[in-house]
Length: 496
Ligand code: SAH
Image (cartoon, rainbow, N blue to C red; front, side, top):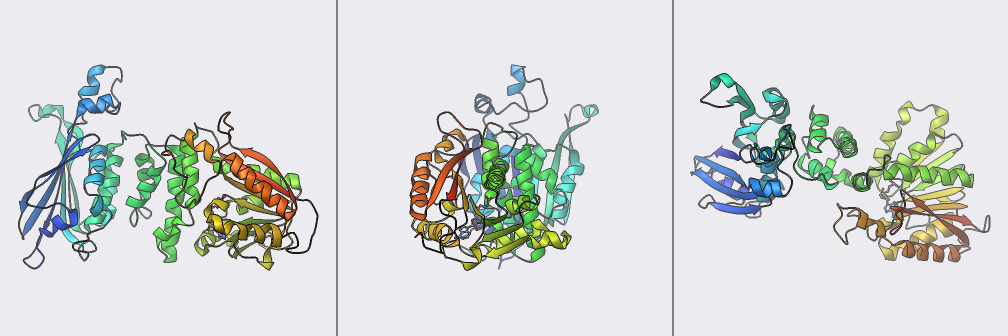
């Protein structure tokens, strides 16, 4: 598996700057151990006028088979020989993308400490991949790379066997890309599109693949006409992960249309990550955990007979949207500290398409739950869905007072991850929380301890409801506490 990246230069801007950008010295041949073999980086030419870096991945096919990853495609899976005799060792493929991601990690991230002025600069680039597996053919290769800013995207068929031209072409092409592009952009495209063209992802699809895809796709994927195909193939057609990726790309497009930066949307879409993690990890529940959470919340609100409802930390507004569909909820207020999240929620709700009656039922407020807020007083119920774990523990008492003491709805629903359940998620390294923004995750006992203290302090009773499939040992993936005010309408703050 082989690819070369070439650039040209002048004495003032020598082509060998490519070495700085790639963090690999043009004078040295270097080898890196990767999980699938050895990656070699070397420079067949390195002058001020012209510089070419080559990445050669020497795959160890036996190791691949041992790892159960070298099965190739389409062939009879039960023939032992087919596992050893396949295209893995020489076709540029997802393995090459993995190697590229490892060996050129800094360049992919656009980092160049030695010469920070270099990464943003477009370069005259030429990328050549002599043997590129192309599921979908040359036509798809052009559809994928065509819209990405290259001056020329050339593909040539690779004959099956030069000695037997009558056998015709193989399903590989030789690809040559030429144009003025930033190196980071070029590498990101390759990182995503090589596995897409290979369409035989060899490694387990972990929930963080969605993140990887969106990171590498930042700035070019959301607006790509083939983004749906790219996401589906990159994620090995994993339905729910693809769905999440597409939702997040949709948000990125909205942000672009807005003139805001897509990267900043991370805040607003953080729960999508949780959903993705939940989906892939839980042994295939038909309904994503986030959906089951919403259903559990809606059921609890109906049981409580709530009509006027606060969704505190409403994020992208999925729950607000669900509440709107049920006319028994007469007033729905979404509150979040993030303007960006609220912006996304507003777009999701499409107020322009709402009738007057509908739009009068809903409002979105910006505010922090760590402060008392008069606007939140007097509601039937408040929901804190996957919110408390986003606050630093020392800030939590402030939220408790603002919600249970000051706003004081009759019913308060609090959901939060059950950290015990994390061991059931293969994708989650031991000791990790489900989302990088989670400041803590609690066991069932810790949650009940907290909820019990809050209930006692503010005059509520509390019951616990499991959300998601309950595991006999570690409990449900999500835990919910249903607080009910013991006294109906104490004065504001009195209970504190
Ligand atoms: N309730 C949604 C979103 C959960 S993500 C759901 O269940 O899917 C957590 C949300 O809490 C984010 O939107 C974040 O902006 C918001 N948040 C975190 N700290 C907050 C605070 N102090 N005040 C208000 N919102 C907060």
